[in-house]
Image (cartoon, rainbow, N blue to C red; front, side, top):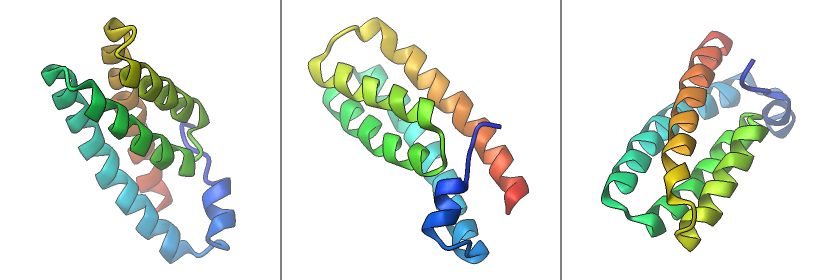
Length: 110
């Protein structure tokens, strides 16, 4: 299981409607984030990539994806320093793959 909804269930007092709404928002956001990360990487726009990694970190953390949140934190830091640029694409690919898997899992929850 990629996701862990314990935090989300606690935060919403188990409100299934609200959880379903947040899952919908998450699904839309991470798809957009993945595309934007690819775009910023292609443009070598490291500042915007760093900012986006920061946003993505919060989104995946809410869905209990702690390891991926930590990776996004690393990408945020690296991109802000323009360090280890050769690693960015693997972070982006892993984000995209993990989020696609998470969205499939979360659809079953809804």
